[in-house]
Image (cartoon, rainbow, N blue to C red; front, side):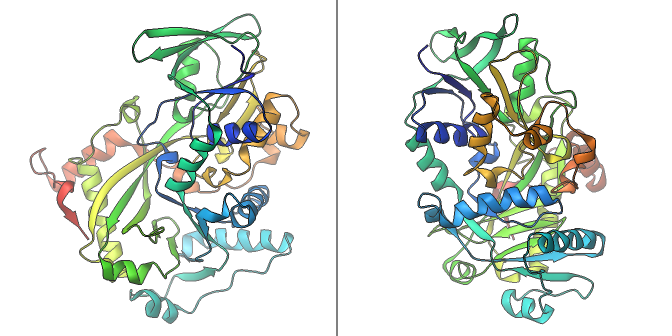
Length: 424
């Protein structure tokens, strides 16, 4: 194989790495399989810089700078601002954010007048909530930028990797699942391998008999609801900022001319006791999802009544969660040509413009000491920061949530509402 890099995965980490290598005129091949429920298959995302951890805030600022100024990325980024709502139990997060902003010589986030929120969105304001307006937050047309980058890397994409073939201190080959010929082996003796397969990182390592990171990676999913909106709703919301209620959900306005909005439902993240999530199940008759869809509808009708009668489609996205929601970007301690890049934890999609450079540096042993201590195989506990989105680390097993919903409503399978015909 002539390529100097083999990148396993074409999500955020894999594609960012591929694009960085392309810009450096480096040789590489991608092995990947498109997955409908990977976070990289999203329709819209947020570029923001406020985090309770100072290091994470600086990382996000570097990515945000490219999103808003780089000739490639800024075409897909619109500074619409974001209304952020904090309730009492999350007020400490706002205090940590303002403390970090002071250290970065940025002004504090000021409280928004609650009546202004009601006037802007038509929803009911609650007196015990704090409303903040972030004027610099931006909406990303995610589908379009990912499509462009896939085209820009101009690399032949091979079939997905099933397992690695370890030698003494290197990975000697990878076994791919060819759609026609079945399993095929690619020689990787003189190749640097980037394992950036999202939730499949641990699955591939386990199949290969290779140890993963000591603290491991867990699989967590969140629900997202796509709202098909009419002309009047599109006209209203296309001129509005993003809306985030910490610990509940986020409402993203339509991107470009698409009459679709996205609600990210962060209130009920979930895990699974098996590889069930990786098999792309149909959730249209799930009692748990039906319960959450009804809760989401009640929330929208109170805070954003103009979205009434929008048609709802339920989706879910999964990602690998790393300890502290800090990804692993590290060469494997035993296999010198294998670099692990995983654990995006839903917070690192916005790092698309920057993360690839760090991954290549890790593969070539050029990461600075501070980055090695943050992203490395062994983490320094004294460097731990508050989780970027702590509620995403509290997910219950889907199987438990499904049983709870059925018991609460006394639903049989036939009783579960059909989400293919669900409206706000």
